[in-house]
Length: 212
Image (tube, rainbow, N blue to C red; front, side):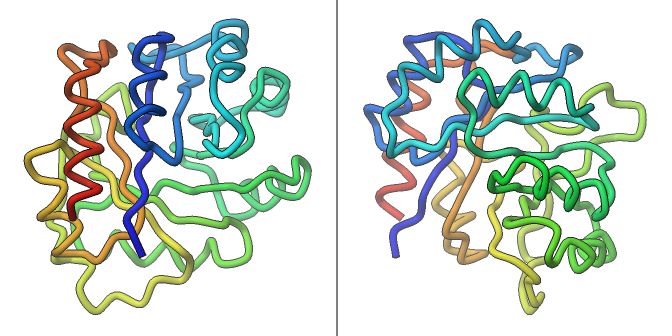
């Protein structure tokens, strides 16, 4: 089965088009004001309208209230990614209320960080393993950090899963071979500066995924 890819934090028509043209299965729109990739629902709606139906449109949230989620759904997202400290109960409530596919990001630094994933069985559809950011960081992800992929060796995944955290065109092939990931996610790895996506880096990343 070929590995699928998500390009996250898209904010311009040109970079969205580059992701779609080069085979991204998922495109991500961030709804979190502290992030340099943040979009308001109006901008997100214009981008979502450009994406063909076979490309899933993922809204990325950090401890969101229902109003923000509803605004993003109205803008066109069809998948929810929770990237904050949401509990399994909160994730299950969002999933039940919206009826949308839900991903839960789990920050990883050590093997012990994998344990909470089991609590999301029945509450989420996918687990996204991401690198844990420093406690003082303003952002829970998108900082170009990676974790030791070998931590996933032998771990019994409670749900379908995706790999994130510091992935770029140079290392994603190794990441896929090391972990067996069938879905990978990148944001800062295809940027020229925080929040500024690079069409050539997007193309190179997706080419590397396709070649793995």
